Length: 152
Image (cartoon, rainbow, N blue to C red; front, top):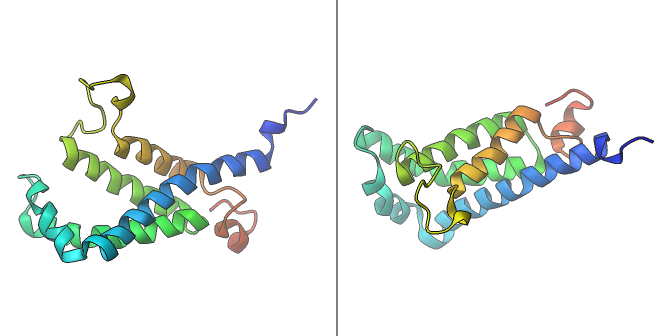
């Protein structure tokens, strides 16, 4: 008997379920920075978190780009368009968030107050982004509609 979980449909559904939470969180984060916080206020509030090894001008440019990147990459991941590129860029962005939050080892909290906080949220979302980058979008995606059977 054939295992139904080894079908293309179940794999595509799994990839969709990996893309959706990441895309929704990124899109909502970008939207919030534009419409609730305001871009300039967001940048001014977070300039102090730019690491010392990074030039201040680069931190300013990076912080101005974050809301655009979050919103754009989030939407692309939700619909499954340019999924591998979006997954790679989202991974790099989330790695930078983890480094800014807690230093180079920002993904793992070695002394969490409880075991559920062992991994920081950028690590969890970066994992979803890496899945999108390495595996692709699956059949339930705009990539599949545009390029057919070719893996996007």
